[in-house]
Length: 554
Image (cartoon, rainbow, N blue to C red; front, top):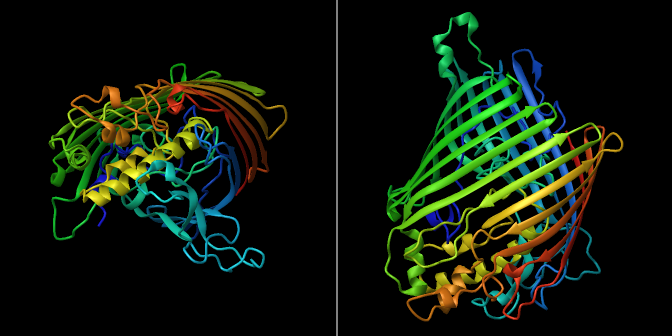
């Protein structure tokens, strides 16, 4: 049975709390850290009283990284081609009662007939030479050696993948007093630091995957319009003050029990104005979220603020978020490793992102600042302080997306196996895996774009990433603790001493958009690792990434 730990808390990762910041599917304002998609996507086509919307995207991506493990003689190069087809469809009556669905097909599936006939995932044919049709597999981190409790025995292998995954399925109804939405939907609109919708092609480097989704009942309204005369009321979604209320159900393990349910309520307010003094495209939004789980005495509150606007050729966006509260779920699971008493741990996590960009027809100057709090002490008696960005809020191409993801995935797999053998009720070690997200870091990321001809963009950037707290592997540090104190037993994810500089990354992208429906990208990155990635011998080598991608979209 799935436990609430998979969605509620982590060791010592952040909470993926949802944000209610939208009432529609179209992006009202594009954040300064996102590339805008062509206008006209998701256009409604009317047939008498009925309307239809549809979208489609096919993406093929070739990836090469050498080495993926910057501090090991094994697990050197990785390379694969993966693809995904996304289909979106919506139908409505008078644009007031709507149904919407989105599905991904072959998401992350490798090209070819892959696997091992004797052990799985099974290919369609027993030998490589007579392969005639592809199967459905995806790259994943799994056991390659003989010891499932040793992180070094894990590396890239193959796993089975779903052929079809439904992302969204919900209904809207536009009532006289507001909008009601019920079903599986994006946790927020656009790309936020705690949640991203995963829609479109907005990342300046890399691409989005599934996004953050939630099963929700949402009601949004414009409360100030009720005080205006009927003929002056503004019911648009891109102007004025909007209030949103929501209820989310994150976990229902036993349908006969209520204490093991993880539930959440959300309140959000946003203000939008096409023009406000010297500012254009103004957006200011704030939210409060409360999540609770009686079985683990968990009470978490999340607060966030976000603002974006344009001032002439300058585009500015800033967002900050904080998670506070307490839970005993992490301490209860960790007690199986450390034998420490189970206590309620405080949660105190914070993150921020800010971008200033200067846009001219032929070039863009761009400066990004990112912050996610860290946690250098995995003991039960200390607060949980590590913040994790949304997985699709990409910061760079290689460091967090692949190198740190590979290191943390191996540690998480070994830690989960250990907790499973010890009979722990939940597995917070799984959340050690950052899944490619920016975490425990303070980064400065200047970038520059050149657009020499229509449709062509040349982009370069330098990512300087410092650790917010010394980088610590919580699982192996707890296992290595030999006394009351743990400071002398702390290790990083490569077994070395905790460091405070992730590294310097050079990123580049050549992007060509043709007829607003085809996109070709060629990306490259070079990572010069810092002391946070070095092993016990002080060893970490330079890593290189090359990535090519074609995207067809309508």
